Image 1 (cartoon, rainbow, N blue to C red):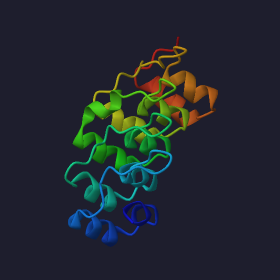
Image 2 (image 1 turned 120 degrees about the vertical axis):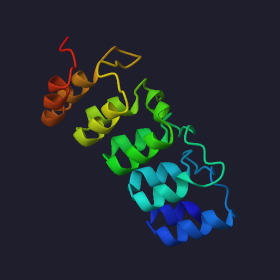
Image 3 (image 1 turned 180 degrees about the vertical axis):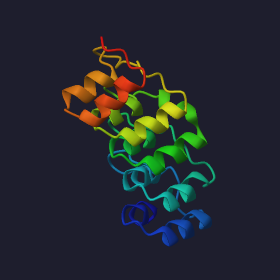
Length: 161
């Protein structure tokens, strides 16, 4: 029920289920998504605030791709969710998925400049590389033709080589 309420973006139902604590907050879907993963994808800040205050919520749980809710929010450009997750734990930005990518690298590859800004505000290393092939956020943004992200990264201290 909690996963469905989050996926269908029904904030009142999410709040009701979290308050009653009848449904495990860290329960997994068959693809290892928690309600927080789904909330991060939807980007509804009211739902995210409710989930983040739930007793026992674990934001470091990874789905089958090795992604945390922060990876998901960054991938889909959900800057409100990104900010809430970083406020809760700024160290989430250091977690790598199965491909060696952090939320910062996911945001760059998908061209989400506002997410890049939010991560930079939390102390993001602008020259971070993937752990597998050594690509930077600039490489990923350029490879995916994300012109605005390339411009932002160059203007904000990313080395070009």
